[in-house]
Length: 292
Image (cartoon, rainbow, N blue to C red):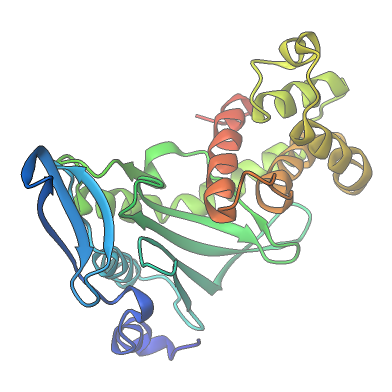
């Protein structure tokens, strides 16, 4: 859906919240006629469908509260919202919600002359699948590679559903992180000019992203790793020939895996899987030049 630049967020608000437009109600939990201490039941106010049994300290954040928070952040950011796209997705019960905003008019040029759009992501769940999650980042539009930012809390707010969860804090962090895009672009250009002559340096980073301490740990484990094999293959067949033997080629190999590689039969939630991979890539990027 596309919206007029001058009134983009208000037009988004006028559409409501789609499948996320309901409230969650809590009530005491009972078993065999007795109340279960320190527990409460969560259910939908419209369908009365059961969502989860949680701690009495569980902090409920409505899906529409998350959506409103992101809309407000974007509105206050003075970003170019022309053509903004909003994607709201929930599962069948409404237990999980993902909302993503893409700003196609806010672009930068990457070192290989690819374009990157600024995006905002919100994740929420009532069934314990994952924590509350707000982030601001970018993706390369030409190859659909998800960009993983390296500026830490300035671009990410993540919290369990506990009393400490704060929408205000999440909003503040993202507002401070909006300007990080230009800083990240600077890093990408530095990475494109920083050579990696020894292939083991690239392998070492692939091993870390795949869940090993380092390349030596991976080799000594005698375990095969589809993640490592995927990144190594993309590096040698696609990114190294196209971009050169540099950190930028390694970076693209890492983000290609985090967003494009197929999941296993056990990973039935692809969005959650990509989030976990992105977190591993972000940790790996801390060893890149200018990572701090």
